[in-house]
Image (cartoon, rainbow, N blue to C red; front, side, top):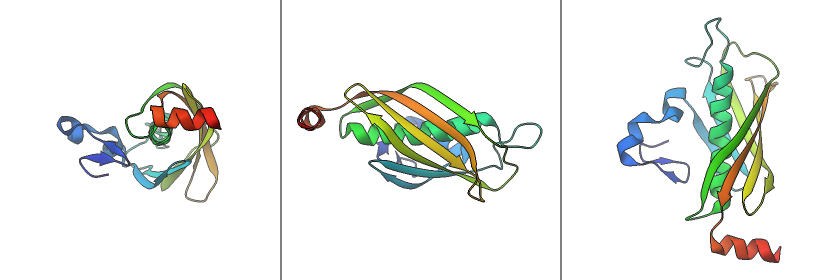
Length: 147
């Protein structure tokens, strides 16, 4: 992430130094319609007992899902999270986790994404689902009507 963008998002300049993504160490690996992938280190994102904090999973999931929703809405569209659910399957004690976000549903007013988070060995550690309210611009609505 640069100081002025997060994937396709322009970050408001006065808040560029306050981004949670930066504080959490999240890096985007791939950011395209239908697939958003990001990584996050366990270091700096731990519970007091030393394992990765479940809230860190939530931050990674919401970041990737929100980016996916924003990409879906297109230029001038809007997306905002409505509901986030995270199931933590196993703890992570070190290394880096990777989140892979894919759409489950992309409609006129809502979009839902599944985010699968895995550890450095490729084991699933968390499954999250994010539903966003979306406002798709007129160009995209015309495509949806004909589909």
